Length: 337
Image (cartoon, rainbow, N blue to C red; front, top):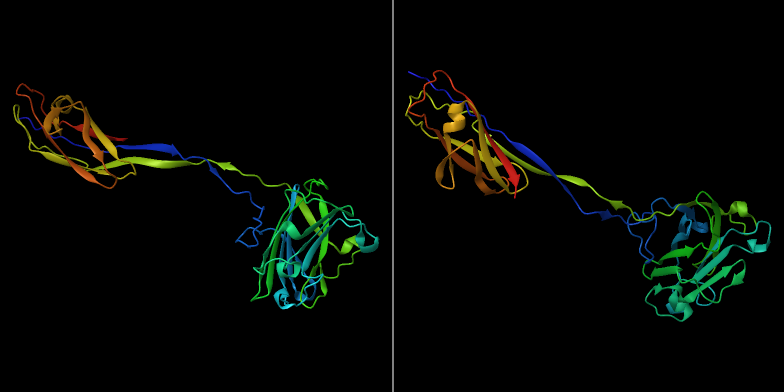
């Protein structure tokens, strides 16, 4: 009597990597000039308080542009004839001449009318650069720089004025690490001029705000390797075909193969170990019994999280003479479709 005990162990895991396309990030620290304060776009700005609690001015300086946000209160309404002439403006002085009257000349003076109804415009609460003055070293420019941007949105209900500017610094040409002196005035409320910083003395450069010039950020290409997993499991981990005699065929063993990865897979199989298994173990492939040692496409198109049963049995040749316990290893291997 020959006792043939077979052990079936099945496990195969393959992992592939898929490189995703490059992702480009927006340039950090360069706010969009649209009169809307979007979340995060003014993070890292220097915030300057306006006198008399009339609001704040936020400033970001790069070597190419200065970005300025005015978030201020304006209690008058030019549509009603209030404060129409010579007011409803905001201004910016950069690098004054210390000790000189009004600190002039400055490297740049920039001011704009911020209430369109006061300047003959519409009463929509939106204005842009058509009503802007631009002076360099005390000389008024006949044309605005083409890359100068400014947009103001005024809420006539809350009396809050949001004005965003993108001011070119080409005429100054600062380097990263330089400090620019910034101060200015806002005509709001009852027609008075409210300065920033608080305590600003136009002729004293030390009372202006110090704005650190930073290297402008540029778009950064990002690539990432994301694991796209090809993996299967098989159970049970062992099949005992029992005691067999020459010429006998075992009962069927059923192996359940499960796709535990993220890809649709095809599954191949192979067997190693005793020659009893490598020459005589059979699997059902495409509906028919087939003998190893290798089987191709035992399972095709197995979806993620799906399982399929594989039938197997062992045919002992009639002239088989060895005795004792025989063992083998059946391995299933998945390939992404």
